[in-house]
Length: 137
Image (cartoon, rainbow, N blue to C red; front, side, top):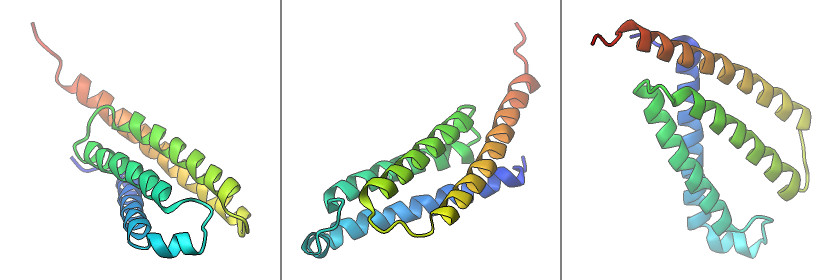
């Protein structure tokens, strides 16, 4: 079955976020000494652990969207809200120069709108798929 455009777009966004966090984990582990030497605000091991958590969540989310699981929409919404809270808390508490805050807000709201429409599409597809083949006793 062909996926709606919003679901395909969200799947690509999840893949890009997954790749971004893989690079984040690798960078935190590989450049640990340099990051410690320049005293970054968030410890490299903490950054690697947080990135690793998002890698696991991203893998599960990609798989569930690809396999069209019924719970994929709820996980997508929960992961998007959690990622937003994590992003803004790290941005506000650990980054000193907070440049382009208006741009970050606009992009974040735009992505959340796309994710909301994808959530609705995934939920509708799961509902239609369940009603399509009723169980006959």
